[in-house]
Amino acid sequence: MGILTEAWNTPSNANGVSWERYQSYLATIRDRLPVSAGEFAEASWHYDWHDHRCPHDAWVEHLLISEPARGSRRERRRIDIEVRLLGAYHDGHLILRYLNVVSYRLDQPNVAADRKFRRWVGHGDWLMDDVGMSNAGFMTHEVILCWGAKWYIECEDFAFEWQPGGHDPETVALEEDTPNRLGQEPATATANTNRATASDILRRYRAEELPEFCDREHVDVNQRGLFGNYPIHVAAVRGSIEEIVALIEGGADLNAIGEHGYTPLHNAAGQGHVEAVVMLLRCGASTTIKNDWGDTPIEAASKRGRHEIADLMLRVRRDDQT
Image (cartoon, rainbow, N blue to C red; front, side, top):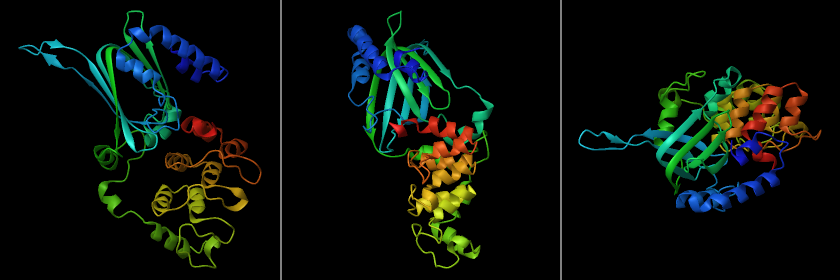
């Protein structure tokens, strides 16, 4: 395992020491790496989590293994791999191309406890990667992702490219139309055309005569209720993905401070709503805001015995505390 990927998996390891070791190691192999691989490994943005090109927290859009061929019978073949990542800020794609691959391992453990999370998050966030050189003299790239995936690719040449732009339309269509067999099926395209809006959710809350909104006409997703909560706090307490998504699309503040200093993430985590926690995290909810008792959502979940959810928040948004 590479220096940085090993350090990521051993929290007791001093990050500063590991980074210095990695930099020293790169210096010893720099002249033997493919030019583009060296540029990628030493790019100032590669490990700068505030730079939009940094792969950390990016999501996998595709991983394509191909065999370019030549010859009259297409008998002269090689293996290439292309990885397309949606950047962490969702404003561009990082394309990685591994040319003439001589060895690769793509390991995604099938852990029963993780499947209910992975139906929402796929591989999860790209956490750390490590460029190196094999004993045979080929470039290596080791990657770890949030839900236990480990990739190792050994190749003769390498190229990378940053492409500004948002979501891949083909990926969006796949999310809407293709059943996800890890868990429940996503809403079909037909159902999505009739899905609830933020206004629908506000009308629903009024019709249910919720105490939070019983004495006022709610017309704004960011209008505070009787006890200090906002509509999105109610959706989080109920664990309703439909309501959370509709309110967010209607402009609800993901990190709104409600009763007792709780954010929606505090509420969803405290109630044990795994899917709601994942949805809020994917939309950018903070894991570091403290409630009136000084607890972050992670700490509050742990105190309520929601250790599985606390661990989820640590794994999905590990960099939120940096």
